[in-house]
Image (cartoon, rainbow, N blue to C red; front, top):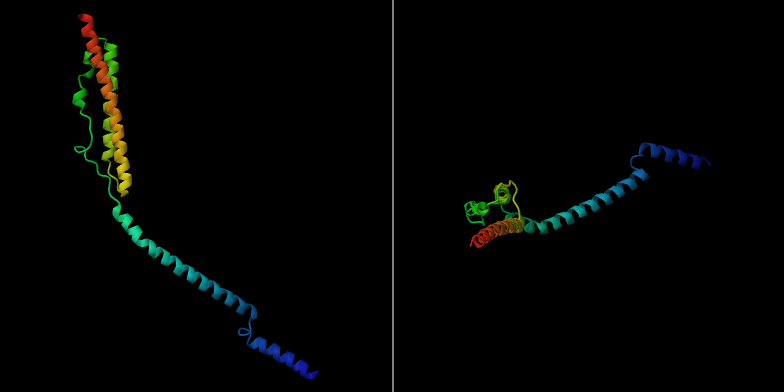
Length: 167
């Protein structure tokens, strides 16, 4: 019995003196922490490798970006002088004013579109987006031109009908 008590006292003293070395729960926590650190490291390496594989694509995409530059002289435009006297064939002042308002509205719309295209962007855009913007500008300009030509043809028919009535 004496040996049993001595061994218990010895174990208690040993655990008090060297408790930090015989820390069972701490040992388990350190092992779990070591496993988590190694897992996080392997994930970091895997992510870095995947990012390294996408770097050439990213660099190529950045190099393909360009600024939106618009040149009024080389792009499709509307000459306002061509439509200046379009509505002068109307004798009725109300029809003449309505025609002139429509022509002025369409020419003003084209002027606004050109001003929007002239805005310089600080950010670079992809070439495809730049082409889409150019296509939209062209389609809007074509619609305005069609409307102006319709107004011009209508005014021309008015002249023709007035000539036919007088003869």
